[in-house]
Image (tube, rainbow, N blue to C red; front, side, top):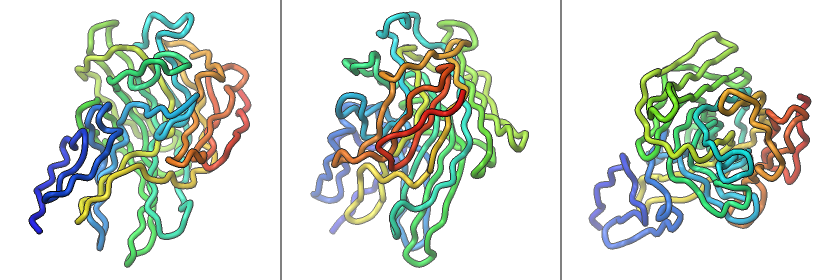
Length: 299
């Protein structure tokens, strides 16, 4: 059987063709094609994780790829748009939820890509974002290992892994802001407060709608280059409780409200991650993996 050459700089929007076979991926049809970090594992095909996708909303405050908080410019009092965002979290330890399974996660903040209101009547296809990735990599010969990295992404371009070593327990601070309002010129800083290291780029050109802002725990779509190829949503590792706190938008407290929360569910509707209510000063929350409820943090 002849195998087509697959180039993953931009994955197909509707499917992956191998010889005469078409593997349909309906969710890609409505989302920009984006790429993220690559994990090459021995005795396994190359695996590509696509963590920079807009929200895949499946019901009231439920998504197949996002858990966390999403604010939109159609909400009352938020019509001015979003030009800066910050977020802090502790890099979670990724452990297997199930044995002999590769599992992937990304923790990030961004502008764009989310729901424009709490009912998610409209979504946005631009997204500038940065964060950390925490993965469990299963190899039938070498066994299970974990990997951690920091990255940023400008949809629809591929994500870029930055030269910053992160490990579980590190305090991460991410700042994304437009250098001048409506200039389409941005700065991104990823700071490892624990180690004192940081990475930044202060001259990034990106055309945003400024329509949404979010603090998210995500499970990506994974493409395994094999015969036949494997394409689809993947499970989240066990991450325990990830605390996002504090966060800001446009230089001020975001004033989070419970209606802005997203719960991550798998394709059967079972919860993979649940966001708590906001803390008392409404600038943070907890996100609990494999839980149907989650307690808010102290402010």
